[in-house]
Amino acid sequence: METLMEDEEYNWKEVKLPILIPKVGTEEPELERETGGRRRGRDILIAIDHGPNSKHAFDWAIVHLCRLADTLHLVHAVSSLQNHIVYDTTQVLIEKLAVEAFQVAMVKTVARVVEGDAGKIICKEADRLKPAAVVMGTRGRSLMKR
Image (cartoon, rainbow, N blue to C red; front, side, top):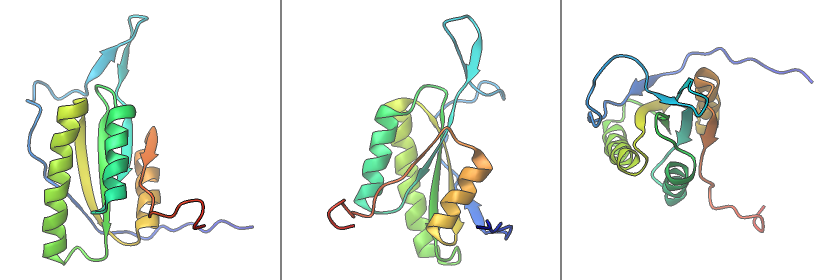
């Protein structure tokens, strides 16, 4: 079987989030290890949409997965970036999630709204970021429905 490589460019917009953490320096946050060394936080990719399963996956990730110094990368796929109503609604959602992530887990959040098929976009973003984990909700299809 042959694997097809997709090198096509895709459109995206970085979402400007409210500044929650005062900027002290330009270097990445690090934590001390028990051995006395330093470690950099992890990158965690969370695929989000406006559904309840996505919110549940996000809540699970910030409670069970995130640690201090981690960075959450929120990705939302849309059919068109030209639709300002969808983009504005998504920006409000992402801002709320970023504030919640900071309040609960004290993690930095970066967000992108990307144009295209959700499955392909999540894979491309995971390939670009090389995250420690990719978190996404289900579509409500239980084992019985499959």
